[in-house]
Each structure stands twice: as structure tokens, then as C-alpha cells.
Image (tube, rainbow, N blue to C red):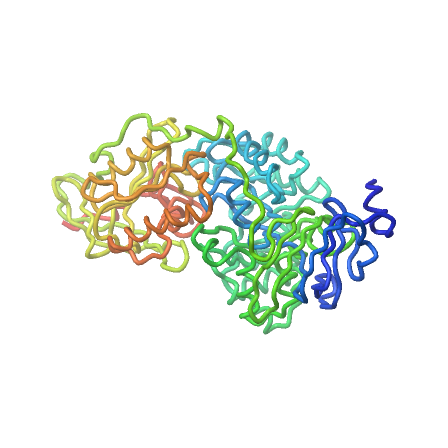
Length: 588
């Protein structure tokens, strides 16, 4: 028992910090009233009238009539999507009032397994951002369709679930439940027998019997709703709804509209970002931006704050620890303006001042990364232009192929049949029809696989782009208009230990190095955002209109999102979960 905490609450010992002269946003009752918060160590001792806790040594923070809210909680985020090492990520989101996240660190696990995840969690422990670990339900996502560096089986999942910071199982793919994957069902059984732990679903477009089956199996949350209809169905069936409003998917407006029109209770609704691009975070913020968008969509102020705090805590049975301003809770406190021009002014995380009137008070030193996080990008052999050629059946002059087109607003692919010319037995891309070469190169030195397909939707006119970030196997993904630039791009990434680059006419025009797992940089958020702007600007000049091309490119390898993907094993029909040929038929 923390005796000092009790003495502060009773007024016998002065508080360490008191925030006063503010308006409390009470997420338990959805009230707003005048008051303050008293802090002892890393815990809230009192809320409301707190002047009695002020004494010698108390740091008094004047809220100046502004609003006092709980620290924000992102219930589903992959911090690796920012491209930042965990300390740089923590510094970036803390500035915007995010004091806790739930994450599976799946991307790090794909590269280096549980050892790598635990190394990153250890690094995160040196920051003031609270991380709760949701254990990946499967690494890789599709073991029969891709190669990865790390692997999770039932025994590893059991070991991970026994960690004190583990709160459940993440990204449980609906079709895998319906197919009865034995290892997955075994892992879900383990979680269901562990008090307080949850099964977090990944249930895109699942309705009716399919949705019912997943929820009956023990899934309690889902973050994949694309429409109001899907959102309402989840709430009506007792599933906690996590609405995505990040960089890769923005579903808030559609989902909230349906919920408010039906006048549904929002206490089981939280807003998450899932994937957050560095430029978006630097320019717009994190969950503070989600609050602004929720307010714009018609959500009242207390409910909007509740959706980025208490509701996420409740979804993981953590509301006795975090999520609200109440005695005994972790001292995560934001001072903000009101709903007219919402912004975070000051932040306290775990009882420590992080931001004061917009000025960040912390700067975390670069971590000494564990060996398992470094030197993860390697090939069996360097690639050549020949590595990416797709050969037509002997004697063919024209063939019909299946092109996968990315949608411009969300990284989901659709099929398009296109006729392409054949020269010297090699199928040629056609930039006029927006058909590019795309390939994924295995980068763990395991088998040397190269999977090939045809890509549309990017509208690239020249050159090639490559990245060692490719969900959910993180092999090297390369796309281009010619084989020579593609080969140079891939080999260059190997030389720099992973990252992203743009190549034209044999010259590397821009690059970013990701030394940590081939995924992450130790640059600050602002520094990395500037480097990414340079990459994006060059890609846009080469013809692509997509705002964040590398983030969209990274999802082309994901064999869990409809309709098609490319992995190191080939062109994937996601719905059938099998490798198929891009060639449909010979035309002549």
C-alpha cells in the first residue's frame, strides 16, 4: 500500500503536483465542472476541490480556466508505422497528450520474433509513455504465403501472455476463426481462461453469421469497420467498436454518423489510429486530431474525450488503472482548450510534467539497441534486372494479366484485367495504362524468394521505389517502370541496412535509412517527417498522386486485406488464400 498516497488524499501530506483553476472533464459522468487534480508520485490522490492538498514543496500548475482531461489512450496502434524508434515515437505522441497505448509491436515481431519485441518494450520502459502489450496472434500473418524473420507459435504466445504488461491477443483475423485454424483457437482458449485479458479482432466486412461466429469464439473488440452498418452491427452484438482515424484509414465520419443517427450509447466506442504516418503526426497530431474530427462530426465534448481515454481503458479492463481523473488512477493529465479550437496545452504522464504550455520538457536519448534489432536486412544474393522479369508462355506476343489496383483513399486492392505486350518472351509493363512491375524480395537470407505481379493505382511514370517496410512480412517491396532501376533500388537498401528510396535512370534520388529492424529510425519525428517529405515530393514529380505512397505500398504485401497482394512467394488471391498466376490468358 502506498501510504504517502493515502496521506496526500487525506490532506496530511502535501501533494507533489496540483493542477488547479480548471474545468474537469469527467469521463465517468460526462460532466464538466470547476476543479483540480492532486498528484502523489505517479498517482492521482484527489480530484475536485484540491486546495487542501497544497503545502510546502507542492508544484502548483494553474490551468487558467482551461479544461483538465485524462491523458489520451490509443487502444490499437502500430507505432512502427511512423518509422520511428520507440523513444522517438514516445516523444512525438506525448506532445499531443497521448500517455498510453495498446500495441502488439507486430512489425518488430515479424522481423525478430518475441526477443525483438521484448527489446523494444525494454526501451519503451525508459520513456514516460505507458505501453500495454497485446500479444500478436500470428507471426507471420499468412505463414504458407510469405517468409518472415520471426515466428510465433502457441508456446511462444503462451510465454508472451504471461508478461505483466500483456493485456490480450491482437489482430485475430476473422477468416482464420471461420477456417478453424488450430493454433489460433488454442491461443484464444488460453486468453479466455486468463482473467482480464481480451481477444482483439480483425474483422473487415464481416457481418451476420460470420461476425456472430467470431464474437462467440471470444473476440471482444474490432477496429476494421469501414461503414456505419458494420459499426452498428458490432455495438448491437456487444463488441467494443474501435473506430480507425489514422493515416491509412479514416472511418470516423461514416461510423459516427450511423451511431448518432441511431442514438446509440457510445461508452463502448473508442477512436484509434492503427497506422500513423510521421508527417501526419507532426503536422496534425495524434489523438488530439481525432478529438477535433469527432467534434466536427457532431460528437459532444465529454463523449469525444471519453472515446480517447476511458473507453479504451474499459475495453482492456484497465479502467481501474488509467483512463479517467479519479483517486488511485495513474496520473495522466492533459490541460486543453475547449471544443471550439481544441488543442493540448500541457501534459502530465505518470505524474511527470511532459509539456508546459506547448513546450516539450523531455528529450529521450538514443537507445543502445539490442543486437537482435540490428543488421536484419540481407539477401542471399544481390538482385539483377533479370530477377524481376516475368516471362510469358513460349511464343506469346500479347497476354491478358490480372493487375491489382490500390484505391487512392484506403490501401485495399481491386482487380483489373489488362492486355500487355510481350517482347523477347518478357511481359512489358505499360505506364499509359497505369500498369507497373511490382515484386517482393525475401530479405532475411532464408530462401532468396522473389514474388512478382503487376500494380496499378500509383500512376508512376518513371523510375522505381523500394522499401524494407512491407506488411506483414517486411520483406523488400519494390515497384517500378523498369527492371534496372528496381534492381538498383533493392541492392541499395541492402547496403544501408534497410529503409526507403527512390531511383531514376540508375541514380538514387533520395533515401531514408531504417537501421532498427529495417523498419525504424532514431531521428526525431520532425527530422524524419522532413526526410519523408523529400521522398514524397520526388515520387509525386515522377507521376504518383498518392499522398503517402510508401505507406500505401507497404500494404500491398498484406495477405489479409482484400483482394490481392504480392509476397515473396508470389501473387496472392487474398480471399482464396493462395498463390495464383498474374497471367490470365494468351491473347496472341
